[in-house]
Amino acid sequence: MSIVNIIMGFDFGTKNIGVAIGQKLTCTVRPLTVLQSQSGIPNWGKIKDIYNIWKPVAMIVGLPLKINGGVQPITVLARRFAKQLKKQFPVTVEMHDERFSTSEARLDCFENHYNYLHEQQDIKINAIAAGVILKSWLNQSFKM
Image (cartoon, rainbow, N blue to C red; front, side, top):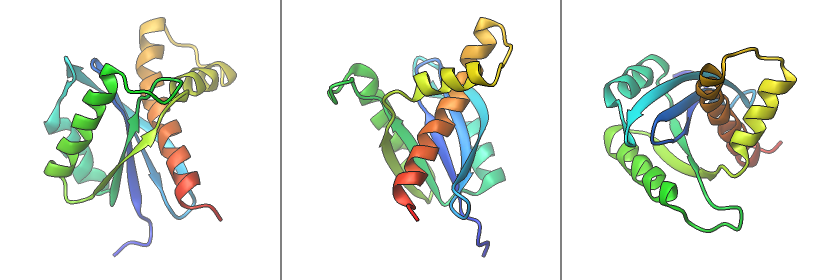
């Protein structure tokens, strides 16, 4: 059994799902990839492939709430995605407040001078946002 517990984070969207990985030991994360989805339906084969490569012990899905904490249509879809993950994989699946994660990801891209075309930047931002969500969860869950 490895002492490094890999955690996988998701930034759910109806067109793109950002994926990041992190680990508990150092509380570090890294954006991994962006998966295409069709009307909110993910490519489960690709998610399984990523799962089999990284063998995470938990999955964290961003919970997209309104600024005031209210529910919006994407909130329902993200919750459904989390429930489907629970059914498909033998790991803990949790949701984590993702308000401002995309804004933080865009700021990260700007600060690090990422030079992408607009479309490519949006795709990269989904993976960075998944990392922001995962980092926030790790910081909250494993405060030293």
